[in-house]
Amino acid sequence: MQSVNLCPNVLGQIALGCIVDPPKEGQPSYQQWKDERETIFASLQKRSKIVANALNQLEGVQCNDVEGALYAFPSISLPTKAVEHAKSIGKIPDTFYCLELLAKTGLCVVPGSGFGQVDGTYHFRMTILPSENDLIDVLARLRDFHNEFMQKFS
Image 1 (cartoon, rainbow, N blue to C red):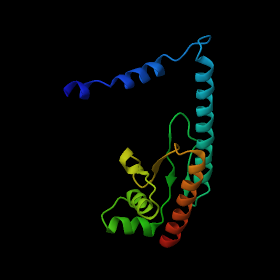
Image 2 (tube, rainbow, N blue to C red):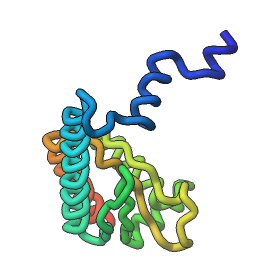
Image 3 (cartoon, rainbow, N blue to C red):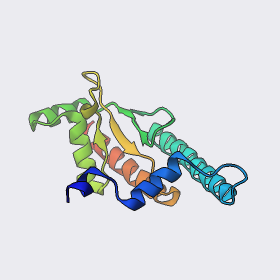
Image 4 (cartoon, rainbow, N blue to C red):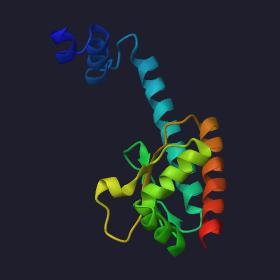
């Protein structure tokens, strides 16, 4: 039992070996590995742009392009009424926003306050990993929630 907790299983060890020592040019599986890697990378790049563009269209949201990570980390300017309401119920404002998003849409994002943001600024972290098709739905639900939230507290 103890060794299971301390060491990865055999499949995990094999997978890690493949990651740190991929096929070399000229080996039988090289072209398949290269094609798959390029396809995945291109899809991640496309999804990062889709997410950043969608977030930047939201009122009070600013998001840099995602580079080298699987997360977008937009800043969000919350209305004063939302900030005051969050504080009145004992919540950090961006945590309040994220909890409301989860309750109303089922979308789970992480409040920026957990990352040591500058006082008076608000952020959330979201992944870019859903498939391109699913991402369109996720971003539409986020947009609809955000617009309703901003209108409610403006």
